[in-house]
Amino acid sequence: GEMRNPKRDLARAMVLGVIGVVVLYTSVNAIYLRALGPEGLAATTTPASTVMQEWLGTRGASLTAAAIAISTLGFLGQGMLTAPRAYFAMAADGLFFKSVAKVSEKTRVPVIAIVLQGIWAIVIAMSGRYEQILNYVIPVDFFFIGLTTTCLFIFRRRDRSPSDFSVPGYPWTGLFFVIAAWLIVVATIVHYPRESGIGLLIQAAGIPAFLFWNRRKSA
Image (cartoon, rainbow, N blue to C red):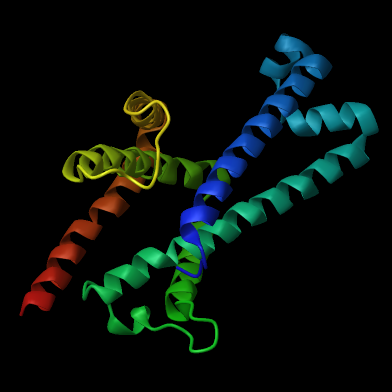
């Protein structure tokens, strides 16, 4: 919402971001395999710390932990910037408390929505271990990531006019992405049924909330 030229900058950020992640992850995994070998990599649950510990000893493991913390902070930062937009949009549409739709006069960002997201994040962080929390989120997150991509097919079919945005490999690239995302959902549910079930129940709790606010809006 705060972008000055979203048509140019959003597409550029997404493409460069994906390329950067692919290069980084591929390079890191190549280092893991070279340093530990396939058997050594399979035997550890913390490959980054293991590699750094072999290279620099205990100090290397500490440096890796710090780097992971910084990386996690960056990921949480983007979540804190994007997730409140859902609350803001709901409130603007009359499906949540009106105050959540208010924006700062100075920065033009939804401050109340961001604070609300921060409080909810604290509650989740105190609810269990990292792995548990991650498996709460993955089924719901990747289901909606795939569902969001299906909108591309609907919009392209509905809008017959030439689009301003090209989609290389359409429709196969989008279809492959949706299938991949939903396979992750299935795999997580199979391997972590309890945590996945909790996450899905939390998400399902939004259905009666939506019905309540929608009814209130129509009243």
